[in-house]
Length: 89
View (cartoon, rainbow, N blue to C red):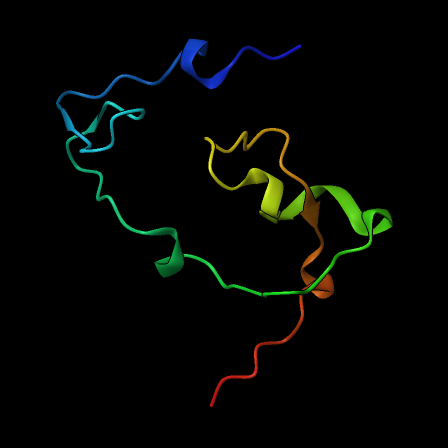
């Protein structure tokens, strides 16, 4: 059984700064805080079949994961070929 993220041993860095996010606290000074939308793709209304989940692969955030810290060790994952192709110009 894994420990909660707040109790895991973390790497140490030479300098830290306040993240500006109350539940996150301090982060390494060289980190940038960005909205997840700048690092992800949103597929609204696309349902993955639970039989498609794989142990390693692309993490997917489901509606039940929103509004709380995400448990990245236990998040559901799918293989890259399961992602819908974006319809970008």
